[in-house]
Length: 134
Image (cartoon, rainbow, N blue to C red; front, side):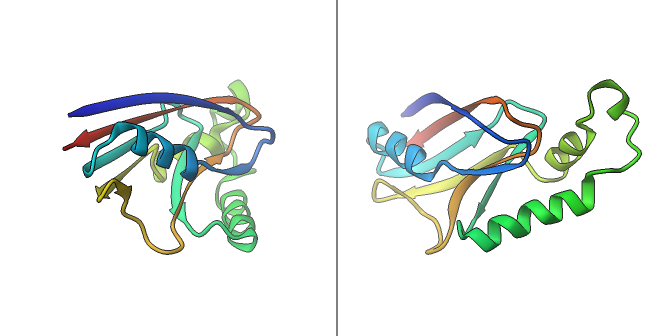
């Protein structure tokens, strides 16, 4: 069985982390899949997904590291629309996650949350969730 759903969120800042775990959990419940895989995909080149602890200091650390590593460089793409840092970050990280489903629930670590990392906001972002299983 395959179940798919798309949802959208509005980001409010250029750099922002938004926890989408509960929305993905809701989609898994609606799918009624008890064992399978959940594929989460962002069809965007300037944001990414992370799976980690949703704690304020961890959020600050992610954003600080992204800014230190990728922002304010001499990127050629910045001559067009000043967001090369976001393209580079997204390419090095990933626009998708794949999580197992066991007993009708996402299998993840005790502290793992699904978070969208916005690096070129504010924007309207689409998130595709596809669930395959039994």
